[in-house]
Image (cartoon, rainbow, N blue to C red; front, side, top):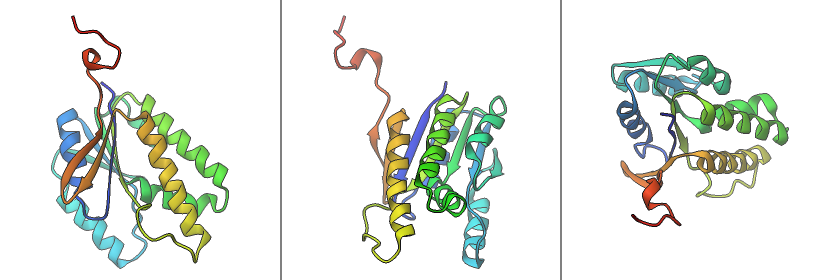
Length: 188
């Protein structure tokens, strides 16, 4: 079974914990894909804390940029992959593509297509950054916010399930429909 799941929320809302729980329910062969780069001491400590908190039974792959290729490479080696997180991946991508928004959108589409067609379940964690103050001082900040919103829209459109995390509680936004309860189906 190939489930595509998106888990959105603010910082420290319980996204990663829920992703690991959801992933554990989907398969025994599990891969955790970490996108963070240890760019400073605080980030290095954060990465180390996440490593310690990760439950046993998860293989870890650290890949800050080439997620579509990595998803293809783990097919047949796992039943489920958790990507943590898409916003860090997008930030890493923008350091490579710079001002080229079309290139960034192309990479977003390539990742979503790879995740949707993967022969394993893929759960993506991402930070919702569009609910706060509009960044007026830096065009890169505005571009990041806008591309993040588009990334989330494109992933959610393909996803079977989407959850909003708030205070450690997963609020379902979108779930797979049972064929018998789909609109237009007449009960037997």
